[in-house]
Image 1 (cartoon, rainbow, N blue to C red):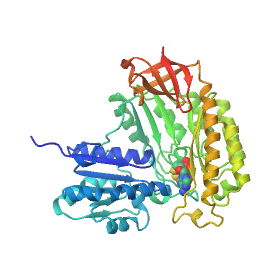
Image 2 (image 1 turned 30 degrees about the vertical axis):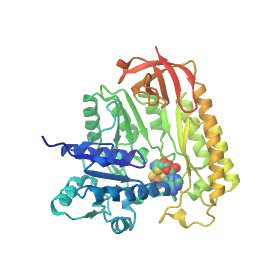
Image 3 (image 1 turned 60 degrees about the vertical axis):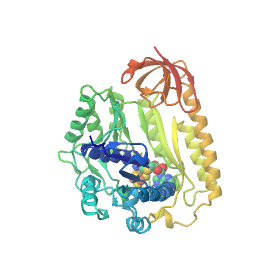
Image 4 (image 1 turned 45 degrees about the vertical axis):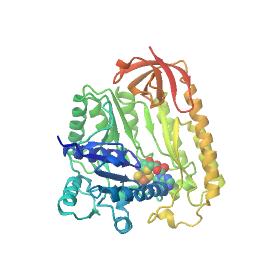
Length: 441
Ligand code: SAH
Ligand code: SF4
């Protein structure tokens, strides 16, 4: 029997990219390919790229260069590069010129055509470069090969209309488009029939879900509809933009039993002056007011955020306002970023760019404060009993199991292997800096 052909896929960036990779995997498996984690074994290598920060791009260049040798050894190897980085002006041409061993280049809007591109390369021996400038209609029904069989990401909307001045996402992912609620429900029901217990609804700005759909629907209503789906245990969602998170959504979390008490609410900066320059459309006071409302309605809510330091014009006072906001909110955890200049974004041509030394100094001070608060928040769990959805063996200690609380905390605990895929009660015995330890009861 002929050995099955294998593919290798590497993904950089956010959950959106991960989901796109799961679709590419789904299409390849439908063509009888199997996945490998060893590049040398693969007959197709795909790099799904990210360009949200410069670092992400540099990693792609480094990894691409290393493929040259593999191609020299195996002329039949097909190398494909796709994702957000390819959507940037001129990037696809640069890759074509600089990396003659790359066979296929495509962007975020036409990934569903990958099988067609692959066939062209194999049958006609040509190189394929196709980037769609404009977002297409949402393509439904692409097979998805998911990483987990317990929890799944379900995209509810694509693109972003916000144009925060530092961000490339609206340029590379296009304008907001929402999936029809029926299509979302259908996907979730299929997942439940396969045994999935938890779904995370994905979008760059999920709170503006529904724009342009007929009949009219908003995000809170979508949440309530999904909460009614039988067999589903947990619902999460990300990302929420503070300007769009409505009271209705807060009440939906409060009312709906399956909606987990967790909100990822990127603040980016604690200074109203910087928030204005970022075009975030809220100020410090509005954000803090929203947090107060959330904490009032949903006690013990898990709160996480994204923070950027070193945005153009950020003074020491602005930065200290960020630190004081973090201390006031007391986030469970935060993704912290050093501002990265991105071509074609308004912030790239702003004056008063901050020097690297100052950026790194602020970043280190920020991380110290964030970590100190995370540890303190974790400590509050010691001695408590929490519900955990068991995902599998612990990453670092196979004798233990791991899963997450409803509030999103990672728990490593002693428990029964038979609990994998189930909701169990776990007593927290010790808080670590970034996780909790416990015992199933
Ligand atoms: N749509 C989401 C997240 C998009 S990108 C939101 O609006 O919150 C994820 C995070 O990357 C952003 O929240 C921001 O904190 C960070 N980010 C985006 N562009 C950046 C840049 N140019 N430099 C540094 N961090 C950036
Ligand atoms: Fe980027 Fe802002 Fe859109 Fe988030 S909301 S994807 S940060 S432009």
